[in-house]
View 1 (cartoon, each protein chain N blue to C red):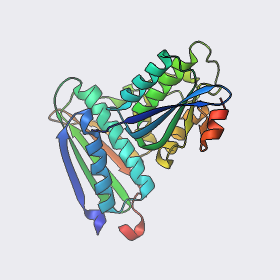
View 2: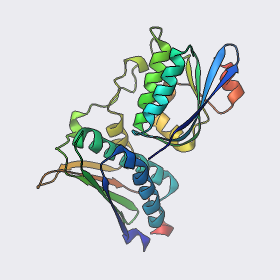
View 3: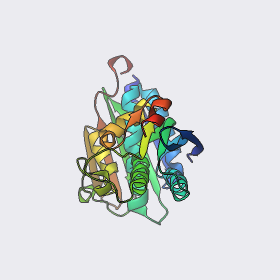
Length: 146
Length: 123
């Protein structure tokens, strides 16, 4: 029952570790039997979420990012925890997809992609400080792999 | 850390076209490498850029910010409306990258080609 397995990674919150984080998602996803298309989406949403934590949460401060990835039936559940200042994703406006490129603001694409490519995306402050991003992607694990 | 390799070539179609063959992952750590290289080339006189993404397995939103900046720098003041960029085009994105291009609506702004000659002659 691969879908009951869980995988954890704890790394320094640094852009230099994004590659390692994507590799971890690939390896954990393969062990869970995640489909190739869902794995591509998860690689992207985790990269975007951790990038936000590094750039907007910790900023210039050092910190740790903890990632937990597990299967639940056909779904993949990912928790990303940090000890950074509270980050309110609702403050980020959606990118203006129907606006001329020259007039489009540069930001907002990461949060947009996270919401677009998951079934649930919650941004929660942790009681003791820090944040948890909880991501759920359903239909990610084909039946034969569960 | 993701390493981005960028090979620069020149092609002559109807106009001179600078081809950037990118290999590696384009993320928040590496996107500036692409943006800075393209910016140098534009400052050096490049007016049409074909970005060959065949060697890019991953591109996140940082990569799209780089494309956005390159397209704007190439367009100068002549960008108008919702028309596609006449100066920046994409070649051969992988399926994963093509999916994000479409999700973010960049296919509305940038022509995407699978064939290099067709791409070069489209400028």
